[in-house]
Length: 115
Length: 114
Image 1: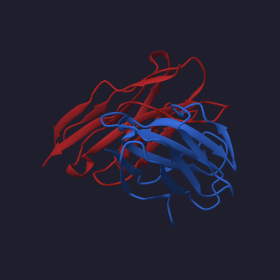
Image 2: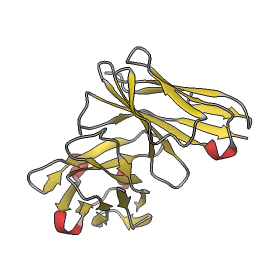
Image 3: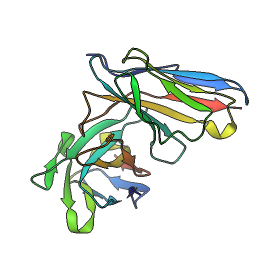
């Protein structure tokens, strides 16, 4: 069965620190990969996605993620975080080319950025 | 434009009662998903509609849960004989059509079963 692991459950950083959130998935076929963010009091919104092509994808607000197929990983990075990045971050996958494309989510990482 | 909306935003009910949760997807989106998010967990898939039909209901936990989308737009998730373990945030998402593209999420309905 498909699964997604996010190893960092809580992360606390100071402003301007660099961020890397881990995401590993378990699935034997082609996958599509996503990072969603949920700011306090708001709904889930897409940060970035990977379907194919360049494994380094750039998203909104300066975030990027790298797909490493051999490691089944899709880690999220940001070189310099801001207080406004305080949120919960979810990694998700769905099957690549067929099926319902339902998301399998990780458990999320709560990021707190100290001003 | 308008995003996905869900009503009510909060629902408190007693054990054993029946509840209905409503989702209004983005206009023109044919694919609609329901997820459930328990405290400290990521959202978990419940059911997927393509148009009016439930194409995948493999995530529904048991037969107390049922969902409909009679006209291919608004969907209602129905829970019979609620249990305390049903307490969670129920999320609805829609996407343009069948495919791997982005799903747009609503704000969710927080269900509390006392």
